[in-house]
Length: 266
Image 1 (spheres, rainbow, N blue to C red):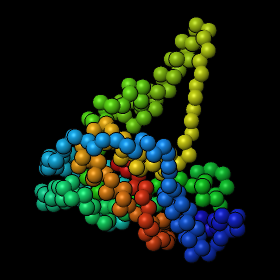
Image 2 (image 1 turned 120 degrees about the vertical axis):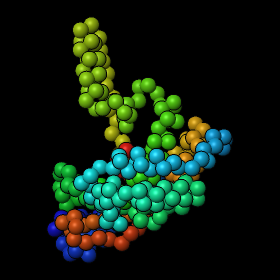
Image 3 (image 1 turned 180 degrees about the vertical axis):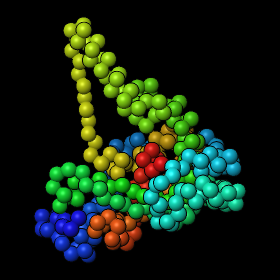
Image 4 (image 1 turned 90 degrees about the horizontal axis):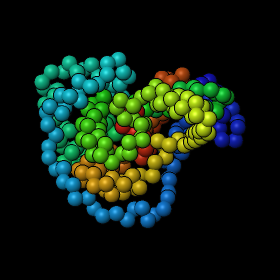
C-alpha cells in the first residue's frame, strides 16, 4: 500500500495521490452504469400491498442475529452495544425501522459504508488486484435483516429449484458433492458431461438497478419492500480506507451500489 499505480501506469507514493487514486478507482467501480434491453422495464405495478408495521419481535430477532467481534461502520457502534443495550435500545430501533419502512427515508449513517481494500494476488500496485470489503453500520444491519426476512418467503416461491446460490441449506460443499456424484455417474455409464463456468466481472457491483426494480414488480413483490430497498441504494455513499488500511479516509462520494448485496452485508 506504500505505492500504487494510476491509470497510466505511473507509480504513486504520496498519501494524497494514493488516496485520490483509490477514490477514483472505487468511484468508477461502483458508479458503473449498466444497461440492457429497455423493454424489460415495461411491467405493471405490483398489487401486493405490504403496508403493515415492523413488529418489535422482528427487531429482537434481527438484533440477536448480529455477529459479535465485527468491525463497526461510520457510526463506530459495535454490534455488542446493540445486543446488550436492553429494552430501550430495542424500542428505539423499532421506532427508527418503522419510520424507514413508512417514509423510505434512511438515517444518513445507515446509508454510508467504509470500503476496505484487501490484497488478493498479482501485482499489488494495481487497484484491481485488491478485494473491496464494505463496512456498514450494525444498526442498519438490523433493518437489512428485517427486509431480508420479509423478502425470502416471496423469493423462495419464485427461484428455480436448481438455484443454489445464497440459499439456506445449499452450501458450496453440498454443490461440490452433487457435482462429484454427477461426474461419477457419467463416468460409470461412459457418458459425456459438460460443465460451464461463467465468471461475471464485478457482478454484484454492476447490477442494472432499473431492471432489478422492474423484476421485483414483475414478480409482484411488496410495494413497501421494493420502495425501501430502492431508497437505500439511491442514497448510498462510500468512503475509502487507504494507506495501510486505517491511516487515511477519503471523502464520501455518491455511490449507488455502495451498499453490498444483502448476503454479503450481513
